[in-house]
Amino acid sequence: MSLLQTLQQQTLPAKYTQLTENEMKRRVLEIKKKLGSKLFLLGHHYQKDEVYEFADAVGDSLQLAQIAAENREAEHIVFCGVHFMAETADILTAENQKVILPDMRAGCSMADMATIQQTEKAWPVLQDLFGDTIIPLTYVNSTAAIKSFVGEHDGATVTSSNAKNMVEWAFSKKERILFLPDQHLGRNTAYDLGVGLDEMAIWNPIEEMLEYEGDINNIKVILWKGHCSVHENFTVKNIDYLREKQPDMNIIVHPECSYEVVQKSDYAGSTKYIIDTIEKAPSGSKWAIGTEMNLVKRIINSQPDKEIVSLNPYMCPCLTMNRIDLPHLLWALESIEEGTEVNQIKVDKHTAQGAIKALTNMLERA
Image (tube, rainbow, N blue to C red; front, side, top):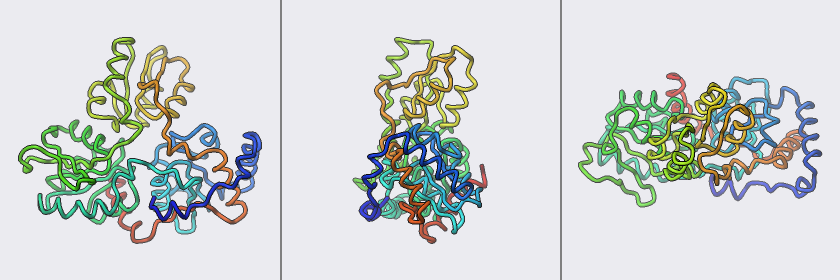
């Protein structure tokens, strides 16, 4: 989300802070019933229960955007997630459909670590160093502008579920990959495919320099220096402590965690992989999960026959995800009911065209 968008965002009216939880929930249900199929409410796995419970569909970011794209009946799609997710939904949905983000402050620190200005500065430098041997890949946790840049350079988006397939595809096209914006997912994926750590460099967008020791001709993967502020808080110390105290506990983490944490864990995979693995696990099994806390709590509540904890007991939920709360959801719905929609997400046509290329390059191989 740009500074201009932040300055232009509307502020939650005071009246919503004065309503009781029951009053707000009653109104949400009333509006959903009134609008019927004209309204489609999406809830990301990391959302608070107070909004998650009203979702018509739940899932990860790309899954929800695809679900929204399949729904041609809804006139208003309310995305309870973060900014880049709502952008992707707007890109994939029809022009007559409006995508609403209940709180424009719901951004993503990882996505913000790769701006289009930084990327456009980095690309010619990397071209000078390596020539036309690089294809860009971007995690879907990135802005529409970054997706568009990647699409315009014949690259693709990736998810944590299909990252391996997409990295293999990228290597079939070019000798090297620029992986934005999450260095950890890029590193973990490339390593699993046999790329050595000594064949990976880091692009530092702040210093505008390549971080690498050795002959740059050996570099196969250039990792953008970005990360998820939630998943980077799971540490090797967390794992070592758990191994000592509860050696029979399985450790499962998201690949946005650091390389060291992933290597020390028993399992690593996407949000869907984590949910499915624990659901299929035998009763009485023990699990420590390294991912966002709202999701961990939801898994704990849904699997009472298993012992489940957060890998880091001091973890907080994703702060930007948690900006979407019940008052903001009700505000968004009442604005739709009144015909005065707030916080609409609209990606311009030029940006959308490039982003669709990147998304299509991935979806054709899904």
